[in-house]
Amino acid sequence: MRSSRLRPGWAILSAALILLIIKAFVLDAAIVDGRSMYPTLEPGAFVLVLRCAYGLRSPTGSGYLLRWASPRRGQVVAAASPRDGLPVVKRVAAAGPMDLRVDAGRLVGPALDAPLSAQQEARLGSSLRVPELSFFLLGDNPGESLDSRDYGPVPIEAVSGRVLVFGGWARR
Image (tube, rainbow, N blue to C red; front, side, top):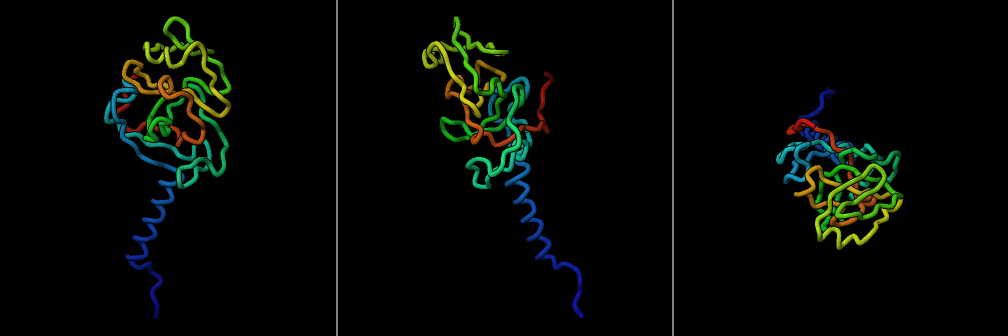
């Protein structure tokens, strides 16, 4: 007579497959490296990234198979840096389409006023356009953050999800 119980090998394989599907489409984990989001996120903070917050991502990470929302201003997101493709955790400061201007060492736009270094100001010129379905991402610690002031707007395809706080959240 055959047992209806699941064999241990199949149980482990099933659990691994479920975890792989969750990591690819639903949740991912990350450790905040550096001080760019301080004081909101401490260096070394463990965060969860809700990969399905804005849509069903491609398992290869090359964009969305189906998109149902977009990041909103003020949300903390995980994205691939346009500069080197490495993952970054930043706050959405502006969503396109939007025009920003440089004024006396500051980047200014609707509900946005961010300081600029001399190099950032020279790179940006007098104005910047954030295209539709792109986002201007800033770190909460502007003096130590490499962000959209350095590499420009980030397209929706590069946003991997919304950051959910788990540990290392400082008061804000």
